[in-house]
Structures are given as C-alpha cells and as structure tokens.
Figure 1 (cartoon, rainbow, N blue to C red):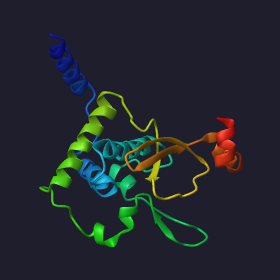
Figure 2 (cartoon, rainbow, N blue to C red):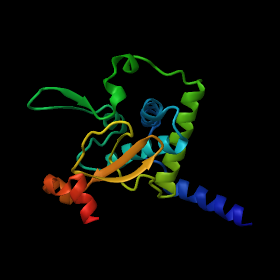
Figure 3 (cartoon, rainbow, N blue to C red):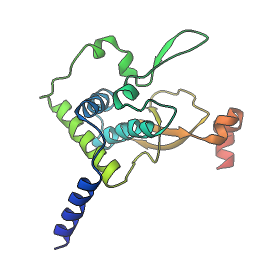
Length: 179
C-alpha cells in the first residue's frame, strides 16, 4: 500500500510540477554529462547536470540550458576565450555527434533524466547549490569560491559572498582557520 501511495504522489508531483526543459535542453545536458563525466559514476554525471541547473537559476549565467553549456568568456586583458565546460573548447569533440545508441550515451541520458527528476520533483541537489566544478587532478586556484563537496572525480564549488568581496580573506589557509 505504501508503494502505491509513493507512486501516486510521485506521479501527481510530476503532473503538477513538470520539468521545465525541452528535448534540446535534455540533449545539451546529456552531451555535457557525456563529455564531462563519461566513465565516472552516475552520481558524478548527476552532479555535473545539477551544476548546469543551478546556473540556470543564477542571474550571472544565461537562462537557456544550451547557452549555459556552450557559454564562452573572453578575457578583456588577454583576449583569450575560455569555456565554462572544457570539452566545448575542443573542436574535435564539438564537431562530433555522439552515437545515441552507444552504451556511454545511454548511461549519460539515464543520469540526466535521474538528475532532472531529483532536482525538479524531489527537490534534491547533490551539489548543494554548486555552480562550478573541476576535475580532482587540476587546481584552478579558485580562492573566491567555497568548496562544497567531491563526487566521483570532480570537486564542486559555489560563490562565497564573503570571498567574492574580499578574495584575500579566502585563501586556503584563512578559510581553514575561519571554518
């Protein structure tokens, strides 16, 4: 009986609060999860997807899913273009359409669908509001960001208002002393 009530509640929630994304949005999310976390755990792909969804809610980022995924920034001083997600700067990957029948693509699609259900229907964000992440083998020196969690081979961050206003107050050493 409890299982039936849970199923009915989930169905009602889905009907009353549909996922506000279309097929193209799901494709962009899946492509991002595929290239950013392919071969990593399903939870890592879910977390990568949650970062994009968190950015959609943040006024500093575009309001379109695909625009968030493909967003590029140009440094005013160096005129160097950087990509928010590294794979979008790789011309080889950008020109390749993943085989939608492959196991890797199907796993990413399943992860994205689960991420959407968790985020919109169950109100669960495994990144706790993170809008940034990087692989655990790089160190971008993000002193103005607060480390939230590690999932799979990624470390997740969000903007720390205190650090954003005074980056020197948020070096690794001062953060550990203030925590």
